[in-house]
Amino acid sequence: MTANEPNRRRFLARLLAASGALFLASCDRLSGTVWFPKLLKSGEKLSQATQHLVTSRHSMAQEFTEADLSPTFRSNGTANPDDERYQFLAAGEFAAYRLKVFGLVEQPATFSLDELRALPARSQITRHDCVEGWSAIGKWKGAPLSALLARVHPRPEARYVVFYCADPMDAEGTKYYESIDMEDAYHPQTILAYELNGKPLPIANGAPLRVRVERQLGYKMAKYIMGIELVSSFESIGEGKGGYWEDQGYEWYAGI
Ligand SMILES: Nc1nc2c(c(=O)[nH]1)N[C@H]1C(S)=C(S)[C@@H](COP(=O)(O)O)O[C@H]1N2
Ligand SMILES: [Mo]
Image (cartoon, protein in one colour):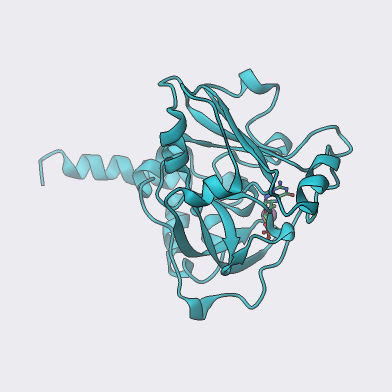
């Protein structure tokens, strides 16, 4: 320990207290059992910078065993996109589905489901936490987003990965979309899932493809992904703050 250490500690303690991290630490006993620790009221929400101090962005989300699987994995939000193109693809069991990857990449590409299945696969049993107050444990299988990115070669300016979904426009004329930063994009548990509990991803849970960003809350896990764009800022894709719920006031960084 250096002479500066006590000072540094006091500084950190003040910083953490100010940002609500002590509140978080005292709730740590609960982590692993309920969704509560991932979800902090907006006033208690840590700044992204402070989160870097408290928990490493490289840490892994907890994984579970087959015995922990929820009997059913419920559906939330859109359960079957009322969209002509989507319904056409679903009727053909997504044989004509092509994931389009574009934006700040050297090699824009499209991927069929078979091509996505041919990428290295990862399975993980994780807990999904929805801000509406429910959780479910499911087993997801898919291609790590990092493997997909390796195919399209992101440009150095790329800072965010944006997911565009098949959901039709809502009453306000906005469509479901989501975004994550490159750190989460390359995280080993960030996968483009095409299977849930050993079966092809059901339509209710996002068929044919949905993202899992395991350290974040449910609304980040975009379902019905039709396109992926790499961008340097959200200004380049419109007025939004990086996601459907974020545009309505939810935190962009919804995790720990
Ligand atoms: N395209 C799309 N993705 C979405 C949603 C949605 O309505 N449309 N809802 C989000 C929310 S709030 C949650 S909790 C999860 C629900 O996933 P599930 O239907 O598999 O339970 O998907 C998220 N991703
Ligand atoms: Mo949710």
